[in-house]
Image (cartoon, rainbow, N blue to C red; front, top):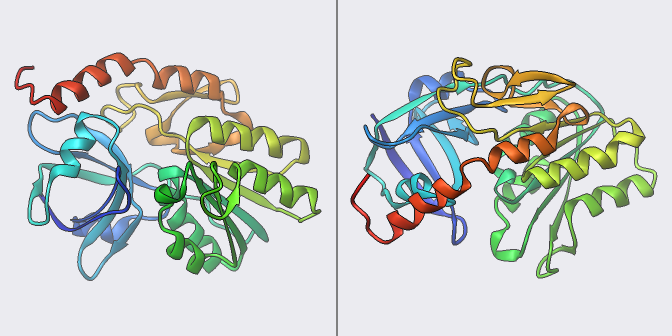
Length: 278
């Protein structure tokens, strides 16, 4: 059991939670994730570890309500227990002194890029961060990202806050202005990561992405999270979640993520309507 000790709604559909998980809090590193199960009948879902507090023995997660399980998780309150929390899982981010690093987060992906941004700057890198969402109400962790960066640019698709347009357009502007960029980290929706990778490829700027593949056991046994990177099959849970964006087959990843959309939609609608059956 893992108790919820803090909960905050960051927007209409995005929730932050702190969970008691002392062992994970001691060991986790930026870029790693955990897998949780709400109750004995629940499915296992992977969520990035956004932050941790060793003294309190807690880990922070941020998630968006997109289906039945995340809706059930969001309905829990401080003091409630989560049945199982497993982690830290996946490989941590490779942190070096690269020089000028651009960290890009789209939507709830800002929660994933945040811990990476912090440690990159602590390693002596000059960090420019770009975060974006469809509109102002969906921007999360702005102040945290500002504190972790040397420079922060906020973009919204509709222009309701910050720069009008996509995060990729902001990056393109930096490149067009002749900014020397030594590495890019981009995390968010698959189409966004694909666009960023295609943008940086002609300029030879190595680009790291974190993949949100479907997972079941998260130990490399089931193969559900397989992706194609550099023409080879990789398991996101044990060989990722971060890969060279220039080598990822984003079209195949997107196709696999759509495999269970119909079933997920039915389960979510039944939950919203109070369906009690299986």
